[in-house]
Length: 164
Image 1 (cartoon, helix red, strand yellow):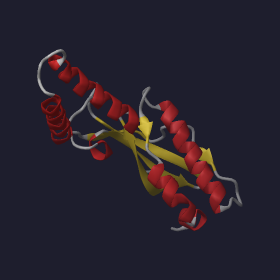
Image 2 (cartoon, helix red, strand yellow; image 1 turned 45 degrees about the vertical axis):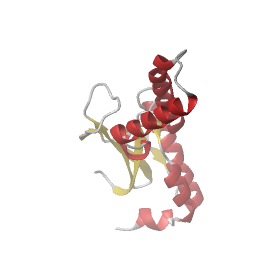
Image 3 (tube, rainbow, N blue to C red; image 1 turned 90 degrees about the horizontal axis):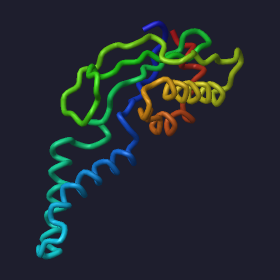
């Protein structure tokens, strides 16, 4: 770490809606074997629900199991930077085992914070930096900033970055 760490932002294999679509498509493909059969609709419906539950048990939830990396945000003087840690696999697919490895000390061009910046301006620099990071990542990766965006307006960013 090269400065004052303040937040770890998760990076996902893909966005939640794309994940849900992929999972639903997989289940639809699995259910195609029953197309044109004489199996009653209530049994098909129960079978589909069992397959959905099986997928949930096998792969877990998107929130934690689709994370493929983290951006560790930190302040260094008047800059916002982010170290990147990613899962060790060359090809990232649904999995239950991950080891996160250090990749780089600076994922994207640092964000400069103006000398007398307000908390809102500092927070905007942070969000802009995470957006640049997302552009630097492998195509399709999703940087989840929802929690940061929810918390950010309530933080005294100026005091936080100046603390020793």
